[in-house]
Length: 424
Image 1 (spheres, rainbow, N blue to C red):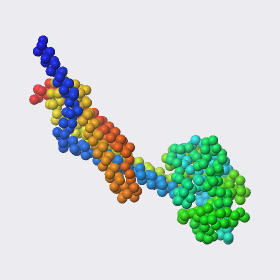
Image 2: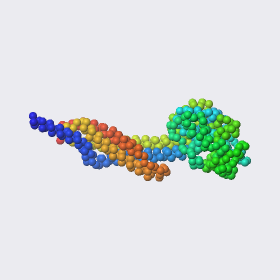
Image 3: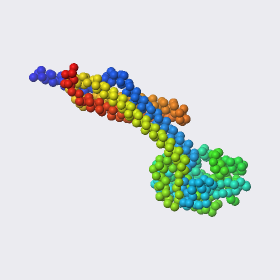
Image 4: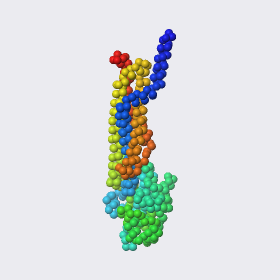
């Protein structure tokens, strides 16, 4: 009885020792097969590095592309029902009008993807014998949709990101109908902004006085060269232009900087439903350029992700299968000593988690360095590290490693220690 108790006690100690040394044993086994370990580690590391590098450059590239495309202005137009985009751009305005109340309808809607609104009313005028276009605007909005002008007055910022309700700067939820309160402070009723070409012709400069339709205006600023019809245009407060043209509460168009992701999800249809008596159209070239760029970058990221899953996963699975095959005898001995299936599963899964963690962290560091160094050379943009990608890399690589190890682990648990001993 004493001898049996001693044997049982030794068996228990052996089991405890096996369980206690699981992590140590796993790490020791990993580095005994360095060639297979490093080949798997390289596969997962390079895969993670590639996707981190591409995603990092893509993130900053999309921001740069978005910024560049913002300078092109609006990508959605709200026009009178009978007007067309060709009519709007042929003379930059049409005779038909829409009610200014459409602005309030848009502001009070819950439609997402409208980053910026620019109501406009245009009049043909003649100043000192020179033909020009007088455009009434809500200045805050107009400057935000034309980032090339933002340095002139220094009070305008870029539009809010996608997914925000339509708003006009200076309008609060409790005061949405007072659409001009903040705007009047930015550009007074007797102030104008003059395009660069027209300013040269009229010899106008900041502080100059210009008479338009029998009303004296003070030049608030001369706008930088834009290379568009805006260089021969004068901008004034919308209400002032409406009064001069006897067109109270009327507009020729509402320009919108719409989020392209929302445009692709049906923004135009929502606007058409909201304003059934108006014509809502997209400026196809701008929108399509944005959409194509975003799609290309997303597809590239997906392709790399598929490659890392297939190549990295296959490499890790091969490493684990080889490990199980070569260590069949050791597995049999461990099972004969009391190791159960759960313990074996923990052993191999721990190895896969460690492998994935090392590959994820190393891949993130390499990918980030590549993005920071090559970003300015390849994409022509500055790239900074994105710490959140470290977490994504770690989770992704560990997940791939664990999933790839499932079949080898199952095979390991089915090893029969008695068969192994007989073979030896």
